[in-house]
Image 1 (tube, rainbow, N blue to C red):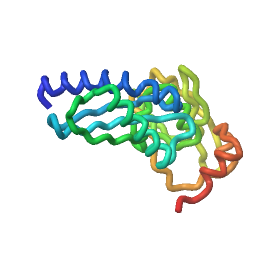
Image 2 (cartoon, rainbow, N blue to C red):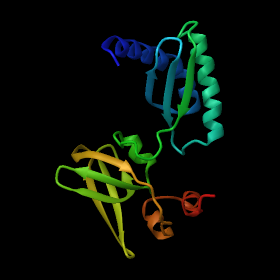
Image 3 (cartoon, rainbow, N blue to C red):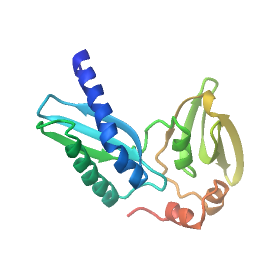
Length: 185
């Protein structure tokens, strides 16, 4: 992407964020990222959102329609055609903000600091610290890591069915535990 293309994309991003703000506020979503690429007339706009409790495909489709209406009303792209893609971040996105950690409670993560790489489940978090739970053959232990010490952290694909005690130790309630322990179909 040329410098001029980047400046154009950045300008669109600010306009898009402003146009989407009221829809996102009303529906409880946080704006995670905006990506604009492609030449004029064939632009692709990706809006990545997230919220506490996640979102179903139907909810994301509803949000996409509302965002499309808001963007068209704000005339962000003028008469120019664009493709809108609305999605949630998904597995593998870096955990960089306290809200990312809060939403990852009970999920398996890998955390890299300057000193080491640690894996575990997110048991607790606040504005400065994340607590990871490790389960070594039924022996559970926790470890606090300062968010400021984390160089990189991601949610991992979890092929195991964690035990109820492990998820309860992460602070999940009965409904959340049931969802995590039910196999995907």
